[in-house]
Image 1 (cartoon, rainbow, N blue to C red):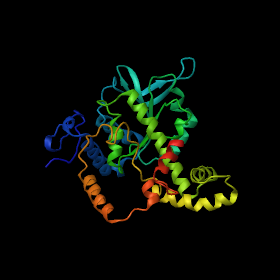
Image 2 (image 1 turned 60 degrees about the vertical axis):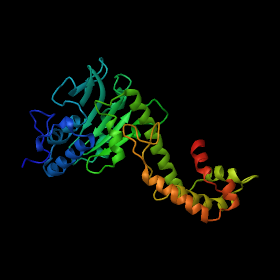
Image 3 (image 1 turned 180 degrees about the horizontal axis):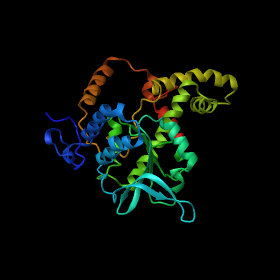
Image 4 (image 1 turned 60 degrees about the horizontal axis):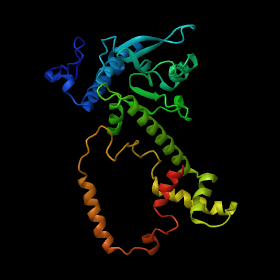
Length: 319
């Protein structure tokens, strides 16, 4: 029996276990393989160099980039204005000699928040977005990867990663987001478009999560104006506030962070095959039979109830 999920350093495209070619594995299987490797080695990763060799270089390989070809993955990539002191980025992933992604790396046990703050103080990757053609930058400790994009929006890009991927704890939908950055799927325009939508949806979910806990006057006044004619006084705000909070709990539920990441273009995630939703059809048929039995309130049927379900969509559209 071979060592499970061992990577041949002399041929990074071959997975030794079961003699299965690495290129034949699915993207999710590659991630799972790297996850298993990380879990086995985590206790021994006491330096940045060990982290790079055990986690970060295999991560590049998992994305389809050859970490042993400096024309594709260049270490110590030099950046900066020619008239100023040259600075280096730990790694640059390149396509035909042009950087498409810049990465700064830390030891596996490093607090990534503290590392990012320190790296920004020394001169941020974001300063070079305008100079280089690379539109994606990442900070990583080999376990967590935070990806940022040069979106040219009023949102402060450096404060909000469009994707954070935890190798030891990830969801299936995050695999699809990460897949966009792989070599076979890399498309600058599609990545920036998806990044813009992912980042915006994350900020909106955070906003509604805060509002669910304590709706502010602006939101309460806006919602009250949808169903109440006349001036909305302070006492009216106080009356509507608990109703708004209850409505948000019904529509958002939980802690407000449970919604899936942005789904672009169509209900099925980009890059993921759409499968027949059999369970959805069963639910629809069950609801149909129940609707025949349960009387419907006239206001609800006409959509004229004080908090009809279309209201949530109007809120999102207006914000």
